[in-house]
Image (cartoon, rainbow, N blue to C red; front, side, top):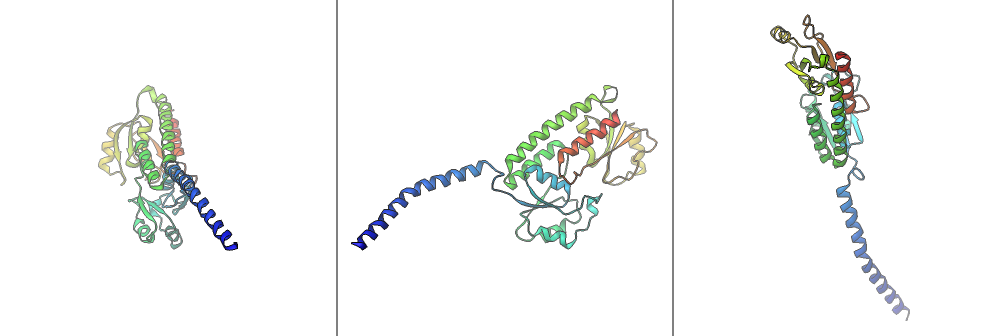
Length: 267
């Protein structure tokens, strides 16, 4: 009798477990479906970036665990020579972000190892390009919802700043500007008329004469690659445009700071 009761109890347990399995499976299916449509909850990628510029793109895209290799104190980031301790962090990352113009990109690739996914980033603060790049990174990180929300914020901020800058145009007319190639996005933000570009190499005597002849009101220089006064004796006011975000990795602040400098110049 004792054996019969044990056997019957085991059968009852199996029946109960079998009945519960479809419910458990159903719950698991709902959770999987939920995680597929709502990102940022379970996916926390470890990201290593070469500079705060890539870091800001990563943060905008939804990354939270971000390590920056080049210190903020280095004014011209491509001049930095990564130390072995810097490269050690790369091997622990899920993603490593770098720009093709950075001379240490080869070292970054070698240090990445087999785990980290190397991602080349198009570092351009042109709002349309920056927004598209952030959305792309969000897709890679599994944080596309966060990236999409940030892009919406970017679009709103750019529209607001553009309106403020247009209202500040000298004489109510779009100012003529000469811009360094990596500062062209700031001319677009201001709605300025670009009459010439230069760089990234220093301006040659022939370029100096040509660009000065266009009589620009402003020169939008690249603060990270400045060689001093670009068009001396031309009468153009030089505005230094900063591309790299600060340690807070706030890319939107870059647009706000550029707008403030342009407003000051136009005022």
